[in-house]
Image (cartoon, rainbow, N blue to C red; front, side, top):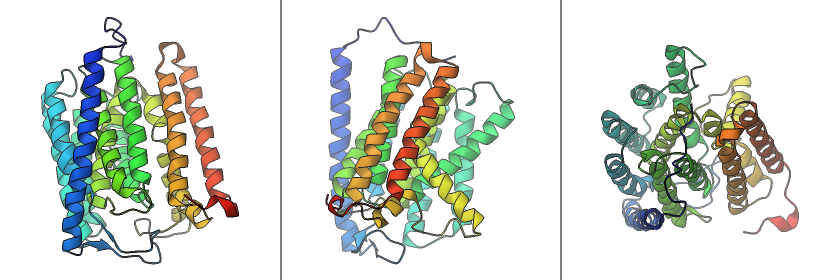
Length: 357
């Protein structure tokens, strides 16, 4: 059953509000500063993403900004895990960030010299299995046998990690998505769970770190995340979404990342149907088509951000005690309709006067 709201906590706890403000501002500023330092080192060592036929950028740009994000985010994540009570358990407080470090490490090696799909997938499988074992309960609310629940959760987590990487193809998009998902998880957590639960705080610092990186990644981007940023971010967000589902909010866990899920999955299915190699870089996602149709990176990222705000509202609605059961699934359908509208907008050619930022 979903966790009940803490009705004994004052609705406007000034200490809580100030803690949130300081944590968000501190994480965002520290991330922005660290990314600036990392960018200088990447330029010095000529670690650049050179444009090619499949790129959406025109000039060589430093790749590996995720180093700055991970350096700030993971210590804050660990600090929150040990400063809060309840879930996750003691083992999970170490396993999840260590798994993220393992993913970041192999992703950085792949950023520098391509490793191929098999080593990367192997680490992803191990970290997903280890993470699923740390979940506080079944993801699908008891609808499936435990072994099947865990299997589907692990496969879905691996897919989410990869799709988060696949979708990082234009300026600002992954930061905007991480801000949306992280903020949504934080809001739901603060509204429905004890203030000392780790989940909303972890969502909050992911959103803050993504905002700090966005300062450098907004169009025209001065640095890219690279796999070292997108892979561990996808893993940590996947952990929070699965934990949200395990807490009884499966519908909200589906709604928050729905745009990324739909765009990446539909694109994968089209490529599979044509017999293409699915892990090769391409320009066939809906957001990439939107840029090809004459829209700027900023316009597309803003449209995704606006859609995510509406998705957060629907996710919060789905967690309302009175909206459980059929009504919560209607919120998922409404979210699907919103994402469909966004995809149709992306497919439509832009008008001549809509290309400016």
